[in-house]
Image 1: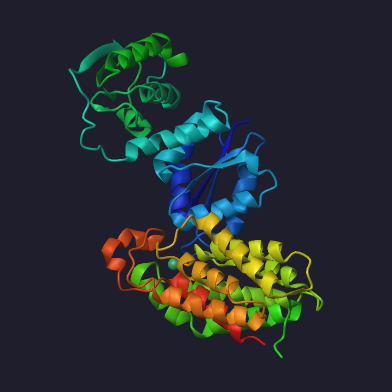
Image 2: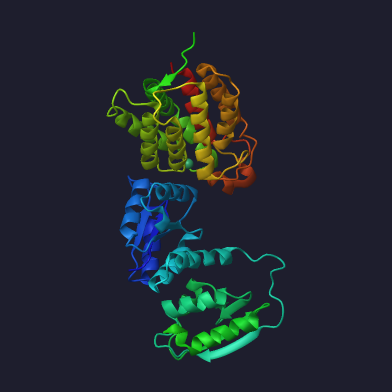
Length: 221
Length: 209
Ligand SMILES: [Mg+2]
Protein backbone atom coordinates (compact mmCIF):
# COMPACT_ATOMS: atom_id res chain seq x y z
CA UNK A 1 0.00 0.00 0.00
CA UNK A 2 1.00 3.63 -0.03
CA UNK A 3 0.58 6.68 2.11
CA UNK A 4 -2.88 8.12 1.46
CA UNK A 5 -3.86 11.74 0.95
CA UNK A 6 -6.78 13.87 2.05
CA UNK A 7 -7.55 17.17 0.35
CA UNK A 8 -9.51 19.58 2.55
CA UNK A 9 -11.02 22.65 0.96
CA UNK A 10 -13.79 25.11 1.74
CA UNK A 11 -15.19 24.17 -1.64
CA UNK A 12 -16.27 20.67 -2.65
CA UNK A 13 -15.35 21.43 -6.24
CA UNK A 14 -11.84 22.60 -5.35
CA UNK A 15 -11.25 19.49 -3.26
CA UNK A 16 -12.52 17.21 -6.03
CA UNK A 17 -10.52 19.08 -8.67
CA UNK A 18 -7.31 18.82 -6.71
CA UNK A 19 -7.94 15.12 -6.14
CA UNK A 20 -8.53 14.62 -9.86
CA UNK A 21 -5.32 16.43 -10.77
CA UNK A 22 -3.16 14.67 -8.21
CA UNK A 23 -4.65 11.24 -8.97
CA UNK A 24 -3.57 11.54 -12.59
CA UNK A 25 0.01 11.19 -11.45
CA UNK A 26 -0.61 8.67 -8.73
CA UNK A 27 -2.98 5.90 -9.82
CA UNK A 28 -2.27 3.64 -6.87
CA UNK A 29 -2.57 6.26 -4.14
CA UNK A 30 -5.89 6.69 -2.33
CA UNK A 31 -6.68 10.40 -2.41
CA UNK A 32 -9.88 11.45 -0.68
CA UNK A 33 -11.66 14.79 -1.02
CA UNK A 34 -13.18 16.58 1.97
CA UNK A 35 -14.62 19.77 0.55
CA UNK A 36 -17.44 22.03 1.66
CA UNK A 37 -19.93 21.70 4.49
CA UNK A 38 -22.29 18.80 5.17
CA UNK A 39 -25.06 20.57 3.29
CA UNK A 40 -22.90 21.34 0.28
CA UNK A 41 -22.07 24.95 1.16
CA UNK A 42 -18.74 26.72 1.46
CA UNK A 43 -16.88 25.78 4.64
CA UNK A 44 -15.24 22.78 6.21
CA UNK A 45 -16.90 19.72 7.62
CA UNK A 46 -15.39 17.81 10.50
CA UNK A 47 -17.42 14.74 9.56
CA UNK A 48 -16.28 14.82 5.94
CA UNK A 49 -12.67 15.14 7.05
CA UNK A 50 -13.06 12.21 9.43
CA UNK A 51 -14.61 10.09 6.68
CA UNK A 52 -11.87 11.06 4.21
CA UNK A 53 -9.17 10.21 6.75
CA UNK A 54 -10.70 6.77 7.22
CA UNK A 55 -10.96 6.28 3.45
CA UNK A 56 -7.33 7.28 2.79
CA UNK A 57 -5.78 5.28 5.62
CA UNK A 58 -4.45 1.94 4.48
CA UNK A 59 -2.02 1.42 7.31
CA UNK A 60 0.83 3.56 6.03
CA UNK A 61 -0.55 6.89 7.21
CA UNK A 62 -2.26 9.89 5.67
CA UNK A 63 -1.04 13.31 4.62
CA UNK A 64 -3.59 16.12 4.67
CA UNK A 65 -3.50 19.14 2.38
CA UNK A 66 -5.65 22.16 3.26
CA UNK A 67 -6.64 25.43 1.67
CA UNK A 68 -7.59 28.32 3.98
CA UNK A 69 -7.39 28.77 7.76
CA UNK A 70 -10.48 27.01 9.04
CA UNK A 71 -9.73 23.98 6.87
CA UNK A 72 -6.46 23.69 8.78
CA UNK A 73 -8.15 24.22 12.15
CA UNK A 74 -10.80 21.61 11.45
CA UNK A 75 -8.21 19.14 10.14
CA UNK A 76 -6.10 19.69 13.26
CA UNK A 77 -9.13 19.06 15.44
CA UNK A 78 -9.86 15.84 13.55
CA UNK A 79 -6.25 14.80 13.96
CA UNK A 80 -6.34 15.46 17.69
CA UNK A 81 -9.46 13.35 18.10
CA UNK A 82 -8.26 10.54 15.80
CA UNK A 83 -7.51 7.08 17.12
CA UNK A 84 -4.00 7.05 15.68
CA UNK A 85 -2.96 10.70 15.35
CA UNK A 86 0.66 9.71 14.82
CA UNK A 87 -0.28 8.32 11.41
CA UNK A 88 -1.81 11.58 10.21
CA UNK A 89 0.22 14.58 9.14
CA UNK A 90 -0.98 17.98 7.99
CA UNK A 91 1.35 19.38 5.35
CA UNK A 92 2.14 23.08 5.47
CA UNK A 93 1.95 23.45 1.72
CA UNK A 94 -0.08 25.12 -1.01
CA UNK A 95 -3.00 22.83 -1.74
CA UNK A 96 -2.51 22.18 -5.47
CA UNK A 97 1.26 21.89 -5.77
CA UNK A 98 1.46 20.24 -2.36
CA UNK A 99 -1.11 17.60 -3.30
CA UNK A 100 0.58 16.83 -6.61
CA UNK A 101 4.03 16.58 -5.08
CA UNK A 102 2.73 14.45 -2.19
CA UNK A 103 0.82 12.18 -4.58
CA UNK A 104 3.91 11.55 -6.70
CA UNK A 105 6.02 10.88 -3.61
CA UNK A 106 3.39 8.48 -2.24
CA UNK A 107 3.12 6.79 -5.63
CA UNK A 108 6.84 6.14 -5.64
CA UNK A 109 6.52 4.39 -2.29
CA UNK A 110 7.80 7.10 0.03
CA UNK A 111 6.93 6.90 3.72
CA UNK A 112 4.91 9.41 5.71
CA UNK A 113 7.77 11.78 6.52
CA UNK A 114 9.05 11.81 2.95
CA UNK A 115 5.59 12.48 1.53
CA UNK A 116 5.13 15.43 3.90
CA UNK A 117 8.59 16.70 2.96
CA UNK A 118 7.75 16.43 -0.75
CA UNK A 119 4.58 18.48 -0.23
CA UNK A 120 6.34 21.08 1.87
CA UNK A 121 9.27 21.38 -0.54
CA UNK A 122 6.85 23.21 -2.84
CA UNK A 123 6.27 25.74 -0.09
CA UNK A 124 9.76 27.17 -0.24
CA UNK A 125 9.43 27.79 -3.96
CA UNK A 126 5.99 29.32 -3.76
CA UNK A 127 7.52 32.25 -1.87
CA UNK A 128 8.49 35.09 -4.19
CA UNK A 129 12.24 35.57 -4.57
CA UNK A 130 13.64 38.11 -2.15
CA UNK A 131 16.04 40.89 -3.05
CA UNK A 132 19.54 39.58 -2.48
CA UNK A 133 18.47 36.08 -3.43
CA UNK A 134 19.70 36.43 -6.97
CA UNK A 135 21.94 33.52 -7.75
CA UNK A 136 25.56 34.55 -7.97
CA UNK A 137 28.01 33.64 -10.70
CA UNK A 138 27.94 32.30 -14.23
CA UNK A 139 25.21 29.93 -15.33
CA UNK A 140 26.38 26.34 -15.57
CA UNK A 141 24.97 24.29 -18.43
CA UNK A 142 24.28 20.61 -19.02
CA UNK A 143 22.82 19.04 -22.10
CA UNK A 144 21.75 15.43 -22.32
CA UNK A 145 19.42 13.03 -24.07
CA UNK A 146 16.69 11.32 -22.03
CA UNK A 147 17.19 7.59 -22.20
CA UNK A 148 14.57 6.29 -19.83
CA UNK A 149 11.63 4.67 -21.46
CA UNK A 150 8.85 7.10 -20.68
CA UNK A 151 10.85 10.31 -20.56
CA UNK A 152 10.21 12.67 -17.65
CA UNK A 153 6.88 11.24 -16.50
CA UNK A 154 5.81 11.42 -12.87
CA UNK A 155 8.38 9.24 -11.13
CA UNK A 156 11.54 10.39 -12.93
CA UNK A 157 10.27 13.97 -12.74
CA UNK A 158 9.86 13.56 -8.99
CA UNK A 159 13.44 12.25 -8.78
CA UNK A 160 14.67 15.24 -10.74
CA UNK A 161 12.74 17.70 -8.56
CA UNK A 162 13.96 16.04 -5.40
CA UNK A 163 17.56 16.11 -6.60
CA UNK A 164 17.43 19.72 -7.79
CA UNK A 165 15.75 20.79 -4.56
CA UNK A 166 18.70 19.49 -2.55
CA UNK A 167 21.08 22.16 -3.81
CA UNK A 168 21.55 25.83 -3.08
CA UNK A 169 21.21 26.75 -6.72
CA UNK A 170 18.57 27.96 -9.15
CA UNK A 171 18.15 25.06 -11.57
CA UNK A 172 16.13 25.11 -14.77
CA UNK A 173 15.23 22.39 -17.23
CA UNK A 174 14.34 23.69 -20.69
CA UNK A 175 13.96 27.10 -19.11
CA UNK A 176 11.50 26.14 -16.37
CA UNK A 177 12.13 25.70 -12.65
CA UNK A 178 13.51 22.19 -12.13
CA UNK A 179 12.32 22.29 -8.50
CA UNK A 180 8.69 22.61 -9.57
CA UNK A 181 6.96 19.29 -10.16
CA UNK A 182 4.13 20.85 -12.13
CA UNK A 183 6.43 22.79 -14.43
CA UNK A 184 8.67 19.80 -15.09
CA UNK A 185 5.69 17.58 -15.87
CA UNK A 186 4.17 20.25 -18.10
CA UNK A 187 7.23 20.04 -20.35
CA UNK A 188 6.11 16.55 -21.40
CA UNK A 189 9.65 15.46 -22.23
CA UNK A 190 9.73 12.06 -23.94
CA UNK A 191 12.41 9.48 -24.40
CA UNK A 192 15.07 10.71 -26.80
CA UNK A 193 14.44 14.37 -26.04
CA UNK A 194 17.53 16.55 -25.96
CA UNK A 195 17.28 18.50 -22.74
CA UNK A 196 19.17 21.53 -21.49
CA UNK A 197 19.68 22.14 -17.78
CA UNK A 198 21.07 25.37 -16.43
CA UNK A 199 22.08 26.24 -12.90
CA UNK A 200 23.29 29.31 -11.07
CA UNK A 201 24.23 29.84 -7.46
CA UNK A 202 26.77 28.45 -5.00
CA UNK A 203 25.96 24.76 -5.66
CA UNK A 204 25.35 25.12 -9.40
CA UNK A 205 28.10 22.71 -10.49
CA UNK A 206 27.21 20.10 -7.88
CA UNK A 207 23.54 20.31 -8.80
CA UNK A 208 24.23 19.63 -12.46
CA UNK A 209 26.67 16.85 -11.63
CA UNK A 210 23.99 15.19 -9.51
CA UNK A 211 21.39 15.57 -12.27
CA UNK A 212 23.81 14.12 -14.81
CA UNK A 213 24.42 11.12 -12.57
CA UNK A 214 20.68 10.72 -12.05
CA UNK A 215 20.02 10.82 -15.79
CA UNK A 216 22.80 8.31 -16.43
CA UNK A 217 21.06 6.09 -13.91
CA UNK A 218 17.84 6.57 -15.94
CA UNK A 219 16.29 8.45 -13.04
CA UNK A 220 16.32 5.35 -10.93
CA UNK A 221 14.12 3.33 -13.27
CA UNK B 1 -26.86 35.42 49.39
CA UNK B 2 -25.35 34.62 46.02
CA UNK B 3 -25.57 31.15 44.58
CA UNK B 4 -22.10 29.72 45.07
CA UNK B 5 -22.03 26.78 42.69
CA UNK B 6 -22.80 26.26 39.02
CA UNK B 7 -24.22 22.79 38.46
CA UNK B 8 -25.13 20.80 35.38
CA UNK B 9 -28.62 22.28 35.23
CA UNK B 10 -27.15 25.79 35.30
CA UNK B 11 -24.72 24.83 32.52
CA UNK B 12 -27.61 23.62 30.43
CA UNK B 13 -29.60 26.82 31.04
CA UNK B 14 -26.52 28.83 30.05
CA UNK B 15 -26.12 26.94 26.79
CA UNK B 16 -29.83 27.42 26.04
CA UNK B 17 -29.39 31.14 26.68
CA UNK B 18 -26.36 31.20 24.33
CA UNK B 19 -28.39 29.46 21.64
CA UNK B 20 -31.20 32.01 22.03
CA UNK B 21 -28.78 34.96 21.96
CA UNK B 22 -26.94 33.65 18.91
CA UNK B 23 -30.22 33.10 17.17
CA UNK B 24 -31.52 36.60 17.85
CA UNK B 25 -28.19 38.27 17.02
CA UNK B 26 -27.09 36.09 14.11
CA UNK B 27 -27.64 38.81 11.50
CA UNK B 28 -25.48 41.18 13.52
CA UNK B 29 -22.67 38.61 13.89
CA UNK B 30 -22.81 37.85 10.20
CA UNK B 31 -22.72 41.56 9.37
CA UNK B 32 -19.50 41.91 11.39
CA UNK B 33 -18.09 38.94 9.49
CA UNK B 34 -19.25 40.40 6.18
CA UNK B 35 -17.17 43.53 6.77
CA UNK B 36 -13.88 41.68 7.29
CA UNK B 37 -14.50 38.00 6.61
CA UNK B 38 -16.79 35.66 4.75
CA UNK B 39 -20.20 36.62 6.12
CA UNK B 40 -21.07 33.35 7.80
CA UNK B 41 -20.29 33.68 11.51
CA UNK B 42 -23.87 34.20 12.71
CA UNK B 43 -25.36 31.47 10.52
CA UNK B 44 -22.56 29.05 11.37
CA UNK B 45 -22.88 29.53 15.12
CA UNK B 46 -26.66 29.41 14.93
CA UNK B 47 -26.53 26.11 13.05
CA UNK B 48 -24.15 24.77 15.69
CA UNK B 49 -26.15 25.86 18.73
CA UNK B 50 -29.46 24.76 17.24
CA UNK B 51 -27.88 21.32 16.79
CA UNK B 52 -26.71 21.51 20.40
CA UNK B 53 -30.27 22.25 21.57
CA UNK B 54 -31.48 19.15 19.75
CA UNK B 55 -28.95 17.00 21.57
CA UNK B 56 -29.34 18.53 25.04
CA UNK B 57 -32.73 16.89 25.32
CA UNK B 58 -31.14 13.48 25.08
CA UNK B 59 -28.72 14.19 27.91
CA UNK B 60 -29.90 12.84 31.26
CA UNK B 61 -31.06 15.23 33.94
CA UNK B 62 -28.17 14.60 36.26
CA UNK B 63 -25.52 15.47 33.65
CA UNK B 64 -22.51 17.26 35.12
CA UNK B 65 -21.25 20.62 33.83
CA UNK B 66 -18.41 18.72 32.16
CA UNK B 67 -20.82 16.39 30.36
CA UNK B 68 -22.87 19.32 29.06
CA UNK B 69 -19.74 21.17 27.89
CA UNK B 70 -18.46 18.06 26.14
CA UNK B 71 -21.70 17.61 24.27
CA UNK B 72 -21.53 21.23 23.15
CA UNK B 73 -17.91 20.72 22.03
CA UNK B 74 -18.47 17.67 19.87
CA UNK B 75 -21.62 19.13 18.37
CA UNK B 76 -20.02 22.46 17.46
CA UNK B 77 -16.98 20.72 15.95
CA UNK B 78 -19.13 18.74 13.58
CA UNK B 79 -21.81 21.28 12.72
CA UNK B 80 -20.42 24.82 12.63
CA UNK B 81 -18.49 24.59 9.37
CA UNK B 82 -16.20 27.60 9.77
CA UNK B 83 -13.17 28.39 11.91
CA UNK B 84 -15.52 28.96 14.85
CA UNK B 85 -16.32 25.20 14.89
CA UNK B 86 -12.87 23.91 15.79
CA UNK B 87 -12.09 26.99 17.90
CA UNK B 88 -15.20 26.98 20.10
CA UNK B 89 -15.30 23.19 19.91
CA UNK B 90 -11.81 23.03 21.36
CA UNK B 91 -12.69 25.66 23.96
CA UNK B 92 -15.69 23.68 25.21
CA UNK B 93 -13.75 20.42 25.05
CA UNK B 94 -10.88 21.77 27.15
CA UNK B 95 -13.40 23.39 29.48
CA UNK B 96 -15.15 20.04 29.84
CA UNK B 97 -11.86 18.35 30.65
CA UNK B 98 -11.08 20.99 33.28
CA UNK B 99 -14.55 20.56 34.83
CA UNK B 100 -13.95 16.81 34.98
CA UNK B 101 -16.44 14.81 37.00
CA UNK B 102 -17.38 17.65 39.34
CA UNK B 103 -21.11 18.02 40.02
CA UNK B 104 -20.81 21.78 40.32
CA UNK B 105 -18.25 24.53 39.90
CA UNK B 106 -17.33 27.10 42.49
CA UNK B 107 -15.53 30.33 41.59
CA UNK B 108 -12.11 28.67 41.42
CA UNK B 109 -13.48 25.82 39.33
CA UNK B 110 -15.12 28.29 36.98
CA UNK B 111 -11.85 30.15 36.52
CA UNK B 112 -10.14 26.83 35.77
CA UNK B 113 -12.72 26.04 33.11
CA UNK B 114 -12.48 29.49 31.51
CA UNK B 115 -8.69 29.35 31.53
CA UNK B 116 -8.63 25.90 29.95
CA UNK B 117 -11.10 27.05 27.29
CA UNK B 118 -8.97 30.09 26.44
CA UNK B 119 -5.78 27.98 26.37
CA UNK B 120 -7.49 25.56 24.00
CA UNK B 121 -8.39 28.37 21.62
CA UNK B 122 -4.86 29.74 21.71
CA UNK B 123 -3.39 26.29 21.07
CA UNK B 124 -5.78 25.64 18.19
CA UNK B 125 -5.71 29.00 16.45
CA UNK B 126 -2.21 30.12 17.47
CA UNK B 127 -3.43 33.70 17.76
CA UNK B 128 -1.84 36.14 20.15
CA UNK B 129 -3.36 39.12 21.89
CA UNK B 130 -4.00 42.01 19.51
CA UNK B 131 -4.27 39.72 16.49
CA UNK B 132 -7.93 40.79 16.24
CA UNK B 133 -9.45 37.44 17.14
CA UNK B 134 -11.63 35.94 19.86
CA UNK B 135 -8.49 35.68 22.00
CA UNK B 136 -8.79 39.45 22.49
CA UNK B 137 -12.07 38.83 24.30
CA UNK B 138 -11.09 35.59 26.04
CA UNK B 139 -7.84 36.64 27.64
CA UNK B 140 -9.14 39.80 29.35
CA UNK B 141 -12.16 37.75 30.46
CA UNK B 142 -9.98 35.07 32.02
CA UNK B 143 -7.77 37.67 33.70
CA UNK B 144 -10.76 39.54 35.11
CA UNK B 145 -12.39 36.29 36.24
CA UNK B 146 -9.24 35.22 38.06
CA UNK B 147 -9.13 38.55 39.89
CA UNK B 148 -12.83 38.65 40.79
CA UNK B 149 -12.68 36.75 44.06
CA UNK B 150 -14.67 33.72 45.17
CA UNK B 151 -18.22 34.68 44.36
CA UNK B 152 -19.26 32.89 41.15
CA UNK B 153 -21.67 35.65 40.15
CA UNK B 154 -18.91 38.23 40.50
CA UNK B 155 -16.60 36.03 38.44
CA UNK B 156 -19.19 35.65 35.69
CA UNK B 157 -19.94 39.38 35.64
CA UNK B 158 -16.27 40.32 35.54
CA UNK B 159 -15.63 37.90 32.66
CA UNK B 160 -18.62 39.17 30.69
CA UNK B 161 -17.64 42.81 31.08
CA UNK B 162 -14.00 42.25 30.21
CA UNK B 163 -14.91 40.15 27.16
CA UNK B 164 -17.19 42.88 25.85
CA UNK B 165 -14.53 45.53 26.39
CA UNK B 166 -12.00 43.25 24.68
CA UNK B 167 -14.31 42.80 21.69
CA UNK B 168 -14.79 46.56 21.34
CA UNK B 169 -11.02 47.00 21.57
CA UNK B 170 -10.50 44.85 18.46
CA UNK B 171 -11.97 47.62 16.31
CA UNK B 172 -8.77 49.65 15.74
CA UNK B 173 -6.64 46.57 15.15
CA UNK B 174 -5.19 45.08 11.97
CA UNK B 175 -5.94 41.34 11.82
CA UNK B 176 -3.12 38.82 11.89
CA UNK B 177 -5.19 35.64 11.77
CA UNK B 178 -8.14 34.36 9.80
CA UNK B 179 -9.74 35.66 6.66
CA UNK B 180 -9.52 39.29 7.87
CA UNK B 181 -5.72 39.07 7.78
CA UNK B 182 -5.91 39.30 3.99
CA UNK B 183 -7.40 42.79 4.32
CA UNK B 184 -4.48 44.55 5.97
CA UNK B 185 -5.41 48.06 7.09
CA UNK B 186 -8.91 47.76 5.66
CA UNK B 187 -9.81 45.69 8.72
CA UNK B 188 -9.32 48.75 10.92
CA UNK B 189 -12.57 50.12 12.31
CA UNK B 190 -14.39 46.79 12.31
CA UNK B 191 -15.03 44.63 15.35
CA UNK B 192 -13.89 41.01 15.21
CA UNK B 193 -16.96 38.75 14.96
CA UNK B 194 -15.38 35.96 17.04
CA UNK B 195 -14.53 38.37 19.85
CA UNK B 196 -18.12 39.62 19.76
CA UNK B 197 -19.60 36.12 19.87
CA UNK B 198 -17.31 35.33 22.82
CA UNK B 199 -18.63 38.41 24.61
CA UNK B 200 -22.17 37.26 23.81
CA UNK B 201 -21.57 33.82 25.33
CA UNK B 202 -20.02 35.18 28.50
CA UNK B 203 -22.76 37.82 28.85
CA UNK B 204 -25.32 35.03 28.60
CA UNK B 205 -23.46 33.22 31.37
CA UNK B 206 -23.57 36.26 33.63
CA UNK B 207 -27.30 36.57 33.09
CA UNK B 208 -28.15 32.90 33.59
CA UNK B 209 -29.52 32.19 37.05
MG1 LIG C 1 -16.56 33.49 8.75
